[in-house]
Amino acid sequence: MNPRNGLFWHLALLLVATCSWRQGSGRESQLRVGKALNVFVRFGYLGISMRVIPTNDTAEEVRWLFKEPTRNIYKDVHNYAENNEQNTPGIFHGDFHMEFCDNRRQLYQAYFRDFTIERLDRPWEAFTGGWFPDNAAKKLGINTSFIQGDYSYVLVRVVRFRETGKFKSDLPLNLTLENDVRERMNDIVTGNVTTAVKFFENVGTHYINSYTTGNSLYQVFVYNRQNYQMIKERIKSKGINSLSKQDLYHFFAPWFAEHLGQIRSASANNTVERWARRKLQYEYLLVKYVTLLKLHGNGTLLRTLDTLLGNDAILQLDLKSLNVIFHNDPEKQNWFHEVLDNHMELWEANMPQN
Image 1 (cartoon, helix red, strand yellow):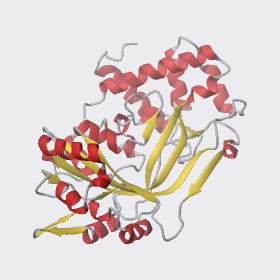
Image 2 (cartoon, rainbow, N blue to C red):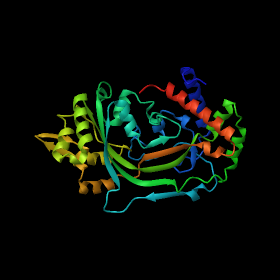
Image 3 (cartoon, rainbow, N blue to C red):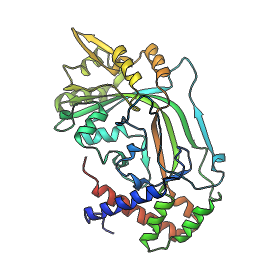
Image 4 (cartoon, rainbow, N blue to C red):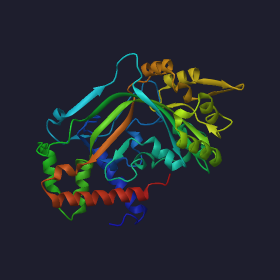
């Protein structure tokens, strides 16, 4: 199967995936480890059904995390999973970090750094394949004119972790499969693509191995090449902790950066975004601007933010291939992987280039 054969295959796969989702829409939609899903249902547009970045439906009463159809694979798999919540009062349960992005593509990759899809080389494209300049700029909080052209970026993010779900260890190979899953496995015929694709549609391609939920605030700083290289080399050689507060405010100020993006919440939480606009204003040399860097080292503001950021977004997601369920049949397992890999290459090749 040649993944470069053109748009026809992309449209055909899109139609199959759409029909499959409608037929399987009755399946349970829960963000739980061990649940299986079909990544091809919304490949390139996974942000539609996973709250990972601000979307258009940002009404205050709309608070969903995950609404992708999922299916149980194993019986009693919950016995091997664990969930932890971080709610100890008085401390900030998260981290503060920045990523240097030479171009727009690296910016997309940086935002989805903690999202992995096994056997997919560029997992961030499963979320950003449908991003065009206008909506990409809106999601990232910057002006459209800065999403195109010869610009570099620094993504600054403050993350508040709430809940983590993961398996305690590698899944035992002797787990009992759900009856309908075993029947679907028996329907796969080695060498027959259609039978493998039907398995994708009816059972899935991957299962949820781990996830972390919570929320985050982020801000994108846009630079010309010269200033970007200057700050990147300075921090690379001496580390961010070597910079004084005055240095930080200088490098991330309106007179050094080409553009300061808005502070956005991953879940489009308007309440916390309004709080940020009020509390994170900084004035230097008679210039006022809002910067996420005001949180850096400020324990009081971070503790306040800890109470404001709820459990409204997915911060990390690890999807593993369903190859594990074919461990007793290596020939069928290899065929499953061959079809899965070819389809992933096909979708990546035919998604609009962002």
